[in-house]
Length: 415
Image 1 (spheres, one colour):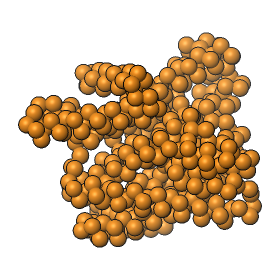
Image 2: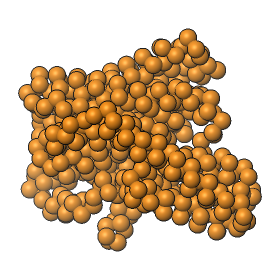
Image 3: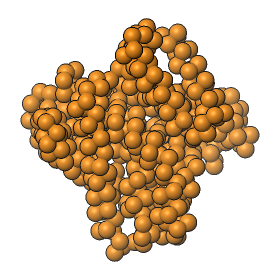
């Protein structure tokens, strides 16, 4: 495992250097594009008879459990680091928009994507049962906080609009996991679903995660305010993230939501009342570095995952066909609730367009696809998901700044 970690970190450093010197893209996108290019080169070399590089890459990647690495490793650090710098007052002002988009928006998108995918795949001759298409809708509908937070920093999005997109991406994991687990139970085992069962699962995952995050966040804050040594305080936040996420998994509450809530509490209340300026500077530097390194590493892994996919032609075509379906579902799931709320609050005229294009998908969708039971359906949905994610990160990620500037005219106050 140490050798694999060393190899991945080395590749990430090399790709970051190449991107900085020669490519010039945002770091996360640049390293993923270079990793994709390397993956394609190895696949091409395999077809030309030079099989060793591709075989070695498959062997190494086969020893990396992407789902485990992301969901049980990187995600806790990335979510906490992202939430640490979100202004709670800004978030509170946009709370109803965020709540609606992170709940009803995800459910609406799930069923829209699932229905459209079922029809499209059937037209293309890829006959997947409706329940599995709905499962694809569930895993592709939530926007990825890692992708969103990494790219909004330099996208020039108005602050109020950035808060909406960021808040939605941070909080939609809870409802997405519940929908995914319910549909997976139906698809894999034919489990009957009751309203009470869904409500209990939602309470355990979402509400439980929020309450647990508040509890551990307050416990860490109580420790932080009693010391004035940045080394000790950084260690406390590390323990909060690692120990808190592990405990959340053990008691079956949403670890991602717990990390978001704890990060918001420490980043706002803790920074204001529990830290000196000296500690705050060191803490910010530490978590910004963690965020940048893990983000780059994750996107390298996403690019390299291409090697282990089943790249059948019909899967790739279905993935390309799914892109407009996912965007259309995003447009409806954002536009409908915002349209209904326009009577109660002011929005900029083009907020729907910017939020539709800025709803990026990323590693979380790939990890959820990898959690599907092994088989032909999983192979198909994994490849389709990968195509949508790559398009989202590269195309939407590189053009979101342009869309934001043309869509908001510099950012109306009501955005």
